[in-house]
Structures are given as structure tokens and as C-alpha cells.
Length: 409
Length: 114
Image 1 (cartoon, each protein chain N blue to C red):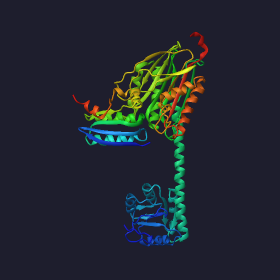
Image 2: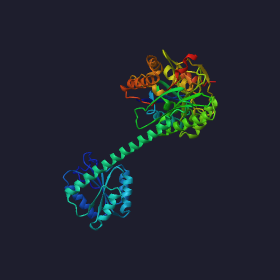
Image 3: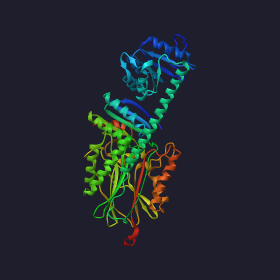
Image 4: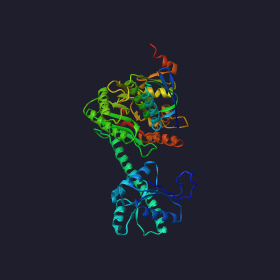
């Protein structure tokens, strides 16, 4: 391998390219053709840094050593790589570099084929003036950058669509036996890392006996895997509820699903579930490593943090979850939420905290359910605004029996 | 906010003192330190979170993963924590019953005297 550099340099000066000069890697086995390119570089109006590799293997070795060319000039007749195969190979090694192929006079067709296969341009050997050469190299680099920007944009659009699909899976339409019995207000706001969905999920299912089952949960970590697991757990929970599994048995089975589906043994899920008895005066609460619920009374709010058990998946098969019964006053709404709502940063080292959230809820107690959850989520977002925005996803669900039967109390 | 991490030997124990915030962004650093200690045969870990301001679910996952890892090697994991806010996170998740929680590093060390 021979490396030539065009910059007039003192012998002991490190041969590192300057960032304002494009770095060009010439892959060419013919010394005469290489000399022509060397002269084109020398005659070009602006400085370029040229490195010469005599074969594909030499080029690959240079790339592996850390050479990051802006543009690769590739001969299509190398001893160890031929035609389009060479284009594919060099692109695989240097994905961010523009590729310009060098063809002979009689083979412009293969130049076009190389462009169709992803090269940015082709030049015909011996038919290139310095000015054209310089412009071709500059254009190829620009074109490559534009292609990469377009590809990144497309990837982010696909990701947004995937997120939207996952979000629909995480946040379903309540499954209610009859309409007009229950008011449900739910909100979900993704955290500041827009490209990454968290694994917050919720669900509402009413069984044939009239009991309303409500779930909120959070898969640890962030990302599409966690979000997909959240969807899986929500549907598993829905299935368990419909098929009659309740209480600790329900969570035990759900934990088995989690353990079978998770991508790493570190992943766990927290959740709080409630059952609203059809008598409208009782509810049963289970807590698995998840925060409690806020009881939204007409004239105030309180935090109900019942005794709970371990989050699902932490110590599989060992946890127990107490079912705690609680009296529900007429007109009281139950608010389930994920920790993103109170872990909001409100200062350099301060978080809103559960007490801060409760204060917010008390101040908003006079509002109806929709306004109430809107206020909680938007206030949390405003508080976080000065400190980088919501760091985590926020999910809130507010359920209350429709108040037609208030006099029954 | 950053995560700070120092480690020192305390007899047979490896003490990892953590400061700052353990969240989805910084937790991998803590995981690496734990894996490095266990790979080096240091399986009796004491993780001191006295200087930790915030711990999220990813951070908890790393601690649980550490517990599984050291137990698999016949080691132990103790946590030093007195801050109400962090203790609350352990109690909400039920992890206060899983981890040995102690007031100080000496207390964590002497809990193994028997």
C-alpha cells in the first residue's frame, strides 16, 4: 500500500487531514491512472487530501484503521473487487462516504449502473478536467449528505408511525358492558424523548356482573421493547379479567406472562388495579410496586396508598399482593397514575413528589373529571418546562360512577 | 444531571458509592460498574446511595439485576440509604423487603457478622 498526500507538509508533521479539506480515498490498482487523479487533485482550485489504496483490501484496511473519507474514488476493475460488487463492498465499509466510480471510455454503461446501485456519480478516465473533477467530488459529497439527511428523516417518520401504533395498543378504548354508567377520563403524554415511548399502559374492563376493573401499569425502562411489552401485558390482563381471574391469582398469572415475554431479566412492571363493585360503594385495590391512587372528592383529594406487594417480575413466583377493600363515597372519582406525573423535576434537585401532586389535586378538586386530569397533566408539564420538560411518560386515568344515583347513598 | 461513581474495598466487600441521579440515561454506567466488580470476583457488594437524589425504574432494575447476579455467584448485595425520598421508592416498589437496607456502610458490613 502506498499513501500519498498532496499537502506540502514537513516530514514529521502528522498526516492527519484538516477538517476543512475533503478527504478523498482513491482505490485504483493502475499507477498511471492513479497519477492522473493525483494531478487532478493538485490542479483543483481548493485543497483536497488524497489517500491512495491499490486494492480493495488495502482500502478496507485503511478504513478499519480509522480513515474517514468524505469521498471514495473507486476503480471498477480492481484485482480483488469487480464492478458493482466493489461498490457494494466499499459502501458497506464506509457508509457515510460519497462514492464516485472511475470507468473507462467504453464502459459508461457500468458507470450508470453503479449510480443506480448507490454510487453518487461516475467519471470517465482521461476525460476529466480539474474543474469538472473538483465539482464532481463536491457535488457527490453534498448529494451523499442530502441522501443521509433524507434517510434519517424517513426513519424518524417511520418511528413516529410505530409509536402511534404502539400508543393505540397501550391506550385502548374502555370495554364497558353498558354505556352511561361510568365516566372515564384518561390522558397520556409522552416524555421529552419523543422518539422513545415508555411502557405506561392502562385499561378499563367491565365484567358481566357489573364490576368495573381498572388497571394502570408501567414497564421499567424506555423504548419500543418496553412499550410492546406494555401492550402485551395490557391485553393479557384484559383476557384474565374477562375469563374471571381476580385478586392475587390474576397478578400471579400476569407475572408469568411478563417473565415469559420480557427481553431481559432486569425488566419488571409496576401496576395498581382497582375493582369498582357494582354496589358503587366499595372498591378493592391491589398494588404491585406501583404508587397508590388519588381519591377525587367533590371538595378535596386524598392519596390512598394501600399495603402492596412487589412489582411483577422482581422475584418471580414469590410475591404476594394483598387485596385491600376501601369504601367509596358517592361522587368520588378514583385517579390512577404513573410515576411520571410526580417525578417531574421542579428544580435542580427537586421533584414534584406525591405531596406536590396531592396539593395540585386538592387545588383542582372543584373541576370535573376531564378538566381535573387535564390540569394535573398540564401543570406537571408546565412545572417541568423550566427543567427540560417531562422526562418520563405520564399516564393518568380518572374513573367515577356517573352521578345519576347519588341519592342512593 | 450526572451520575458519580466511586468504588473501594472494605474487607471482603466492594463498596460502590453513587451520587446524582440514577435514571434511564445514567443507569447503564452503574450497571457496567456492577458487572465489572462481579466479573473481578467482587461479589459482596454494598451500594451506597446516600448521595443519590433520584432513582427511577430503570435504576431499580439495575439494582435488582445486581442482586440476581451476585446471588448467582454466592455473593450479597446491601444498600446504604437514609434519605426519606429514596427509601419511599424502595417501599412503594416493595424492594425494601428484598434488599438489605442499612443506615451506613459499617452497619451494612456488620449485618453480615454472625
